[in-house]
Image 1 (cartoon, one colour):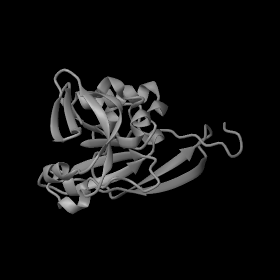
Image 2 (cartoon, helix red, strand yellow):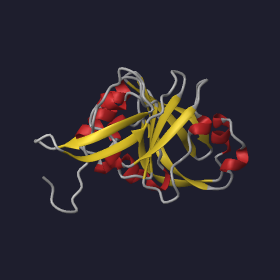
Image 3 (cartoon, one colour):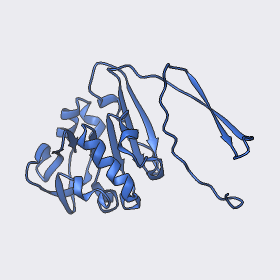
Image 4 (cartoon, one colour):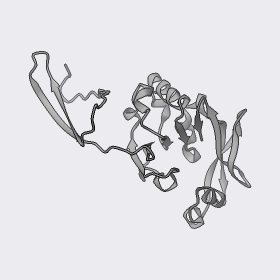
Length: 210
């Protein structure tokens, strides 16, 4: 039982014997009476498609990763809040990429962190954006990071990152704030500028952390 105006989120783990574009969820009490019904539409991805989730509290919206997604299929992206991350690694298995951007990962529950670690260990690709919000964004994910963040510094250009992503340089023109990164053993710099590393990559089990 819940008090009035109190909300509770419950994760439901389901599997399908055959695909349906729509599912119906019913809430049933102990007497078998249905007192809540909701429908949800589904979209089935093809094996070559890429599924990404961006976890952010940014007022400007989610970062669009779909244009930089690898693979021969289509790219799909969802925007999550911290509470949307399930507490089981198996529930993340449908994701190819998980990005944290301008969000307090210190709010992650231990079981959510364990789920993320398990997902990366099995081959997931985790991206942790830093910049001005590096302390909040890295707070709960320190064990997974390929580098130690140590404050910020200005950078005049991100043109090398644009080249790496194969996008037009003017998209990333202008100055920005970089996090000063000290690489951990086994990590490597994929993109750098005069001021320091821009994109650092490390391995975690069978997975990748940027």
